[in-house]
Structures are given as C-alpha cells and as structure tokens.
Length: 173
Ligand SMILES: [Zn+2]
Image 1 (tube, rainbow, N blue to C red):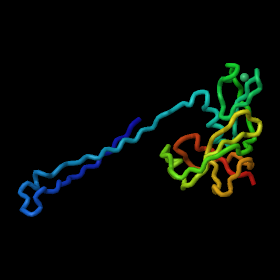
Image 2: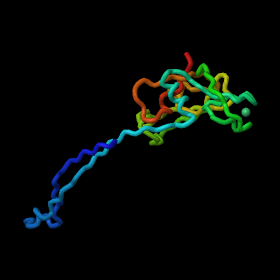
Image 3: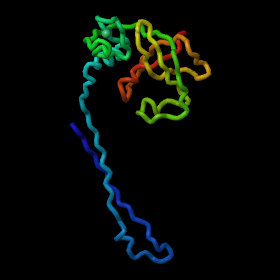
Image 4: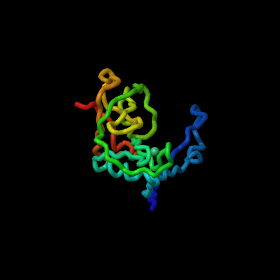
C-alpha cells in the first residue's frame, strides 16, 4: 500500500536583469509540487530469513553440513564443498578476531552505517564452532583492536535499516 502526500509552493525565478524593474516577475512564478511517497512492503530473505529472525531474538545461528561437518557463519543453505543441504546450528556468538580494517570514510551503504562515527572497524571474525570467517562491524576504538583478541556478537536495540545490522561485534570483556 502506498501513501502519497503533496506540498505546493510558488517560487519566483530571479530576474536576469536585476538593475531594471522586473515587468516579467509574475510570469516567472513557478508552481513547485513536492511529492512524498511512503510504501510498506514485505520482503523475504529466502533461506536466510531464519538467521535474521533469530538475531532479533538474540540468538546467533550458523548452518552445518551433515556430510563434511563444516559449519558456515554466515549461514549457507547449501554446503559449497558437498552441495548437501545444511541444517541450522546455534553458535555461542563468541569468537576470535582474525583481521580487520579501520575505515576513515563512510561507505554510504545504508543509514545503519552512515550513523557510525568514523573511524570505525570492519572485522573478520572466526566464531567459535564455525569453519568460515564472518565479516562485520566491530564497535571498538581502533587503538584497542588487536588481531587475536576475543570478541562476541552484540545485538542492536531499536530499529535498523537493514537486518544485517541487528548484530555487530564488540570486544569480549
Ligand atoms: Zn559439506
């Protein structure tokens, strides 16, 4: 369902001959309509939906391949090594920082990222029990970040623009 609201303004364009009386002032009036469109929609993240739903519940899920036992975080619905269908597995949400980058410019990816003060830290974390690296924002002062430090998943309070920002990493303390 879409909702449209309109605002109407009348502007007068500036005369190119400011030194003489503007006999065309009325003619230069322009009506400007500002239309604002609000739209609600439902969106499925497909096989990944449960991962995001559980983030809202404060639980962190990966997926496990029953054939090769690899655990994927971020989750994968199919094991890329075996092409077997994976099953959900809850992880503790703790892990080790493998590498990171300090961002001095915002990416403009979405409002969740735009709200972050720069510099901020993008981290690759090996979650305990997982076989793959999980990239995300680590909310920590860059001078306190060290490769090998212990981190954990924290859950966002309040609305986010993208469900991936229902979580982030913090130093484990
Ligand atoms: Zn596998």
